[in-house]
Length: 163
Image 1 (spheres, rainbow, N blue to C red):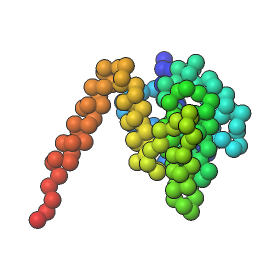
Image 2 (image 1 turned 30 degrees about the vertical axis):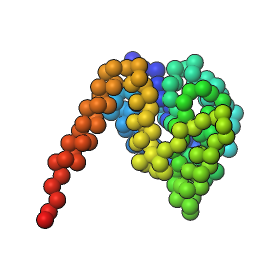
Image 3 (image 1 turned 180 degrees about the horizontal axis):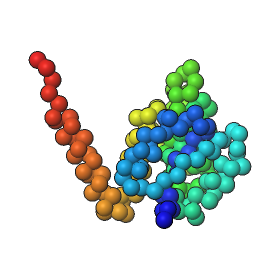
């Protein structure tokens, strides 16, 4: 039986999937039910509004939105839902995501978007941030996050550099 998604991972186009894949991989690793959808702010604005307006009633608790160029997707989603939106700038133009970062980060007062780093590192951190939000109400998930962090620490501590 498929579980109801708790996290929506959305992107403006299929070409953004590669950038957002680390988010989906980490959510899956932690056992967090998620969905991946194409929701374009410019090409499918009605679908964007529907997706955002129905997010909470469908059980979504966090939305991770990746967008490149003008990067309106995260902000428009945040304007239409109270579900927290985490924006991931996608390096889709000659500006390598700087344009997207600036677009996502400068939301007006009253329409917050949690903005992460550009590209795959931002996607991974968005998934971890979503997991931390969900772990506020899920002790098992919180323990998985603790264990994951300890594994990262141990990886660093076990590295031996040549002299």
